[in-house]
Length: 77
Image (cartoon, rainbow, N blue to C red; front, top):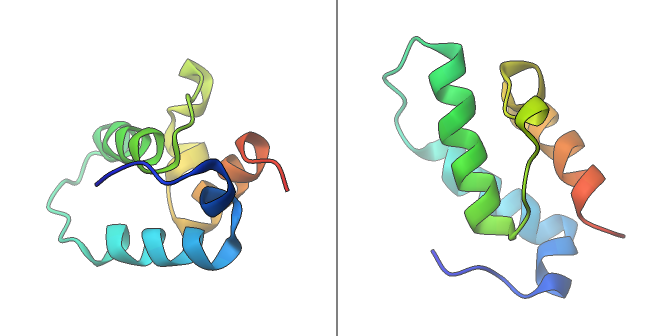
């Protein structure tokens, strides 16, 4: 998936659309840490942000709400 422009990445509708697509994918892992790493890779690629090592953690990337909170720290507006 190509990275969106900075202004597009900030739009709440765009964020929700991208997260909808991501969470529609099947998940077979039962490892929360592995899921956090996969989510971090997706978030970094889709939104053009760089997460810190501390953010690549299930507490920050466990679900859509946690991912949105993490993105709010990286995307202005």
